[in-house]
Image 1 (cartoon, rainbow, N blue to C red):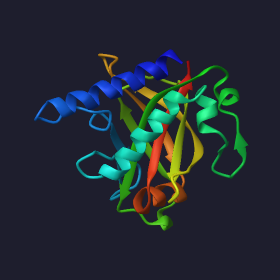
Image 2 (cartoon, rainbow, N blue to C red):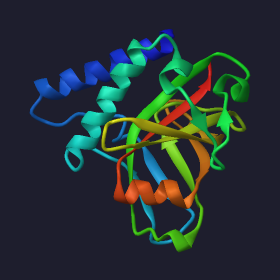
Image 3 (cartoon, rainbow, N blue to C red):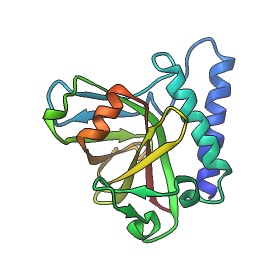
Image 4 (cartoon, rainbow, N blue to C red):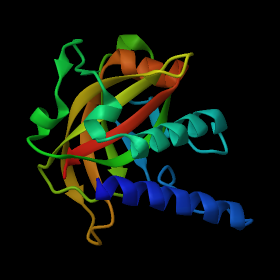
Length: 191
């Protein structure tokens, strides 16, 4: 729970600093890079400059997460890519921590291309081989978020340990939703 509060406080500080300065500051989205396995398909973390409504939705969800009793309560019912319900605490064998939470968009994708494997370099350092759960949340018109869980694995940590990379594979439905709708991504690990 302390990690969640620290993340929320850090995001709030970044937001306040951005308002105080005339030059845009670095955000989680700025520090997130994504490489895909499919040529011509791009997945990126959405920024305020290009997707202000989606970023505002993400900020509102982060506030809901901070106010929730715990991580599992916030996410509620989570399914895997087949539609089967999953228990995040059981998957990670422990207490849950949300390390990253950002909106993601896609371009250049067609569902005939199938699954898209991605390598995400994030501000959180993950150990090589560390298992995480990458949640993709499709935001409906009424504001509800439907979360789908994907297994991710740490593939590298930078020398400074200020960044790390994970690999995950998204289904066509999720990538298509990133391209045509509103999708949030949360990376959950064992605390």
